[in-house]
Image (cartoon, rainbow, N blue to C red; front, top):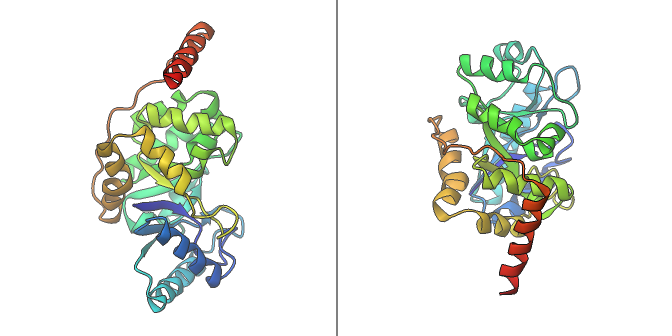
Amino acid sequence: MYDMHCHIVPKVDDGADSFETSIKMIKIAKRNGFKGIFATPHYVDNTTYNNTKLIKENFLKLKDKIKKEGLDIDIYIGNEVYVVPNLIKLFEKGFIYTLNNSRYMLIEFPMLDNPYFIESLIYDLKVKGIVPIIAHPERYKMITNNPNVLFKLIKQGALVQINLPSLKGSYGPIIKDTAKKLIEHNMIHFVGTDAHSFNIRTPNVEKPFKILKSHLDNKKLKKILYENPKAVINDKEIKIWEPKECVKQSKINKFIRRYLTEKNKRN
């Protein structure tokens, strides 16, 4: 399987603080069954997280160290791009890495706000030939409040990556519930660890991976873990299954569903 979101390039953002940390993270990822990792350091305009040259230099150094360590795992360059209205211009100037220099770009929204320009940005990216992949939408307040915000963006042409740790409650119960809801409604296409270190926010995702497997059949699991990432690596088109709109349940329906679930568990 492939980790689509990992802060593994050292000394470029709030992720790995050294090459030694990066190698420890990679060893954990390999033990967890990852075949490849997309290195996605933050790109945030007008901050220190925007050094395109340093990202490439340290990425290439890390590739060399992986080879010297004899670790059988591939890494691919990219960014986690914080959305701003002038994102297209930043990309045209060569400041932003798409995933493995493909048509696919990992983008991040504000955690608490709902920017006015998101829908127009998705449209502009698509016109430019860029397919946006929305990073960890289960963590955004606008989507925990209303998952159909994401449904509309997918219908507009965006793809989705959830964080595996969300499934075990690493970011709290609301985000955990939202992540599961997105899975149930065909609104995820990739997974990532969003790992930043080897001990805190780690690539060790054995437990959430088991949870993911319990929610998906083998066909969907294979597509999310292997086929879609390989399409990104090879810059191929990704065909997705139809997302399902979330229907708000009444309190009585929620009570009945919970009762039936508990009854089935007892039986």
